[in-house]
Length: 144
Length: 176
Ligand SMILES: [Zn+2]
Ligand SMILES: [Zn+2]
Image 1 (tube, protein in one colour):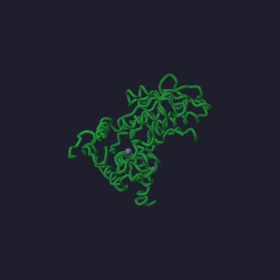
Image 2: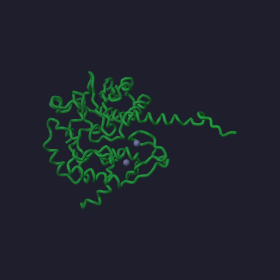
Image 3: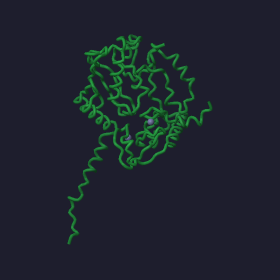
Image 4: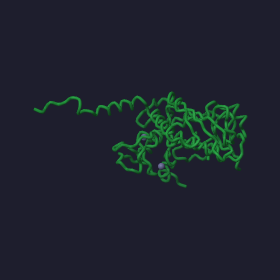
């Protein structure tokens, strides 16, 4: 079961996960006292429609956020049709109501648009099955 | 003639308006925590008891009593877990530590109560819950073969941040 983590922090920051090199270098030289935890990564946005003063973000960060939002917008949305398979949004733990705006992930897990978008800005994975959401998109970018 | 309308009786739908205003009062994370608290009180996992009164008074901090499972190295022991939630819960993981006089002696539990468990930091997902965290901890304890502290315990306890979420956790390479 639970184990101590290895040092991969590639999750949030690298949209396309191409950065194996950063992973290697970080895992070798940080052992001792805990360095500041990297939770303040600026990738997070309250929600795609809520903007924060851009002055607080570097240009690079803004690009990342814009890319992430772009990817999220590619995921299909709809309104809940009463499907029995997805009864509850596991993020807010509230049952779907007919016509709730929902978003479908490639793994077919369904969430309220508002709930899942907030999460996807932090981590591009499905909360239920941990499937990377960008796997399908990745293949079109990566050559190897 | 029948065109007189009874003002009140037909329009009984005003209660739903009341409900929606209540939604606004308690925000997202409070609602979710209240739901979790209810279900944990109703159907607690075996050996797990939540201090419902305390949690009801302060939703951001729960104390959970955990019994060492039968047939494991921790049988007969009792532990206390503290959960702290931020307003970003469930997008942010809860801060979970063992507290009190009995901190389980386990290769992933430091003597200050910090727990090295990946779902509490990097592998957290909002689909997880207090209940699933408790179950993970129970199974982490249950699968233990030898009671001992993590190899870097004394160093870590001296140098770590009070908040275990500030720690950058690494795998203890004890398998290789
Ligand atoms: Zn939801
Ligand atoms: Zn999924």
